Image 1: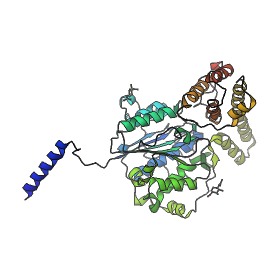
Image 2 (image 1 turned 90 degrees about the horizontal axis):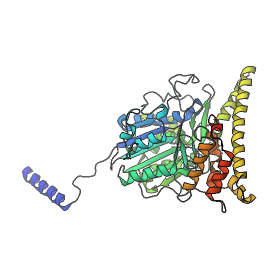
Image 3 (image 1 turned 180 degrees about the vertical axis):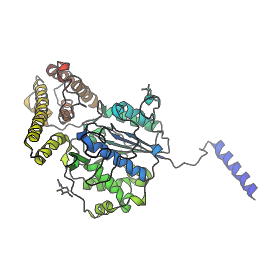
Length: 450
Ligand SMILES: *[C@@H]1O[C@H](CO)[C@@H](O)[C@H](O)[C@H]1NC(C)=O
Ligand SMILES: *[C@@H]1O[C@H](CO)[C@@H](O)[C@H](O)[C@H]1NC(C)=O
């Protein structure tokens, strides 16, 4: 009997094989995760805190460490300004989230090239760099990417370079074509993060993206900690991670999480992009699940009794941190020092503003209405105008203020998008205007406008 069955099976297998139908049943794939904090400097405490916390959630939810890759400069935990060396927290009075975090790529290895190599599984690309580990995902695997950092229209910042949207989209498309994932989920906390995907990401690639902000706005920092003199988290990140602490919520799907996080994040517009059907994927299939992680934060979340977050616009955090300290300190000499620091930050910002003004004023032959459109307009990025925008912001970053070193300039980059859409302005004229103002490349080499 058994023997007969075996023979029957053998014949069946043979038959299937010769018919050309794939012989193996669909394997249930693995989940891979790439967690990235793309900033450096103590005043950006929150980015690494968010990413370390994301690691703790995935790890305790049962995603094996061998499938999790972390990129972070790793300059926060042991920064002299950190009053609790070796400890990073992500909420007031919260637990340490730093312990056990894998340090695959740290320091200068946190850059856009390494990020793309790791994401695409390019081992030769990271040979001799960091842990050398990459996402080795196959057609049945899910990939979760969580990126937390500064962003501008159509760019994500790394400490020393930027990742333009067209390169990210091209990479994701290539990965889809090479069947490097079954589903790819991207959670991204950055100012203007919607602009990385809006009009740019196709909806047939099995990619589902949630962004902290729409294409035109900041995302928000939260939880200012007086002792640490730092914001501990960002609203969108903290909100989706709190969402993981309640059983009814964590067993739900991505789209439900998106809806809840969007409702609760009232400081910016949380958006979704890509293949929205993927939204019906269970959260546990992407982020794992562990009953032990369900806690009171989760039930507070469900009932809507959330802690106040003390939020602030991410574009103005450096100023706000100094102002917060001015409120705290009474000592005269300390206050003097802080006031000097504040004035210096403001002065550098004004210098950037003045250069931008000059560039716009140097757009000759353009009437005032068109110039106003450049100053305050909201032209959208798309596949057609992206090359023009990329040329202008690259030139600005090379000749005027280096974008990753001067995160403040992101506030003005929309004007370069607008220049690519204003009737009567050619890209040559825009280039000329930038070059006429920023002719001396050395002038801004050591300029850091935060
Ligand atoms: C991997 O990275 C190397 C080094 O940058 C590059 O030359 C190569 O083309 C990359 N391979 C793929 C498949 O993209
Ligand atoms: C956002 O929500 C919080 C808490 O739910 C509330 O305290 C705050 O006033 C809201 N902010 C805005 C801008 O609506």
